[in-house]
Length: 123
Image (cartoon, rainbow, N blue to C red; front, side):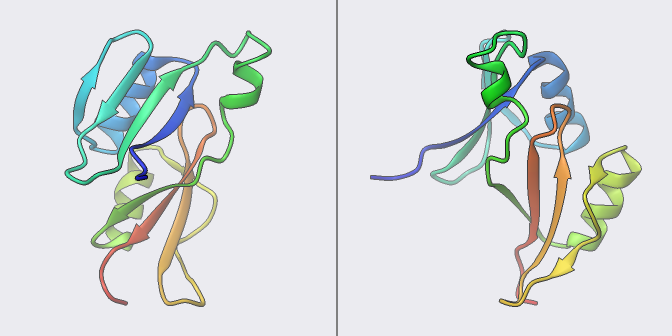
């Protein structure tokens, strides 16, 4: 078994596509334009966003805005952090060195989903 997708649930696909492509700079792989989108990654695991109606109690309130554990690898977390802040991205705090040696910073997308930046090089 392998992990194929990490899915993030969003309330407005068009606005979320703009956020993930224009603000975060991710490259769109495919979308149906209404319900889902997938981004290019070059690895086995892909990031996908999936529309959920926040007014629908069963899917919206349970899925949109929950922590999904998505980690985005970057070469330089300080530069990426500053670039995304300049584009209006809200971070929960400054990049922070972890006890295991990595550096992480957490931010929210338009629906409040928390994503993590992690510096991919040796620290």
